[in-house]
Amino acid sequence: MGLFTHLFYLGPWGLLLQAAAIIHFIRRRPDTWWLWVILFLGPIGAIVYICAEVLPDFGLLNQSFKAFPRRKRIRELETAILDNPSSGNYEELGDLNFDDGKLAQARAAYDKAIAARSTTPDCFYRRGMCTLMLGDAQNALPDLERVVLQDPSHDFYRAAGLLAAAYARTGQPEKADEWFRRAIEKSTLSETYLNYADFLIAEGRNQEARAYALKVMAKKPTMPSYLRRRERPLFARARKTLKRVPA
Image (cartoon, rainbow, N blue to C red; front, side, top):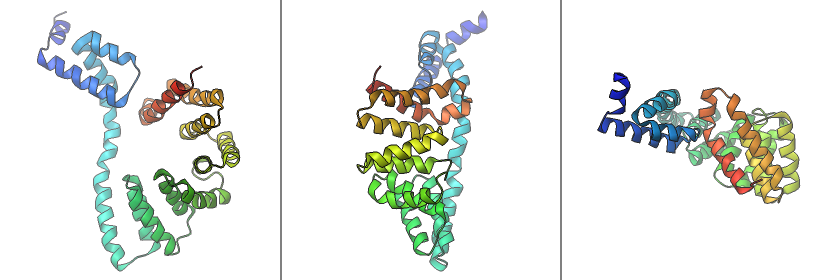
């Protein structure tokens, strides 16, 4: 009992533990019951939460450390391109900027790679993704169409799902529905399911949209913990979809 009593009465340190746990909870949005564990069990609950949810997140944090060598390589390529503006250098620069979240710079690099006679499908695919993610679905279409018509299974059918999303955002519902159906026949990507749900809501097909959001949520209990952490934004998006179209 002495240990538990000591843990429960940690004074300001206990409050700091609870505050840290709550901040992490708000940012990461794990299962709601964790909030009650933190609030009702005090510092003990916060410690349990930190061990179960915060410490494993350091595995994801390690990914962010890759940004430092990646940005160093970006600077090296920007210098190398001055002497050797090859399509390979530009394509690698585009990939690095894409992974770093710099979509406009990535798209510009892919433009130059393609202008320098790069014909790799992935270069067109990633340029199309950048363009779509920047909100320009109309100009994303030619690249995504080129890739999907050449290889419908590109990137495990993610390309087909993104092409469908581009059709949906450019007012082409028949093509959007066709390509969404093709994609979900072969793939269970949460992103594709949720993009399809958005399209279905826009078409007034709310219960179909709800079914796809539920399919995303149904994955959560059987997923390995590292995948659940990676897909948290998609689970949050699925919950918002379910609120938009209640049963």
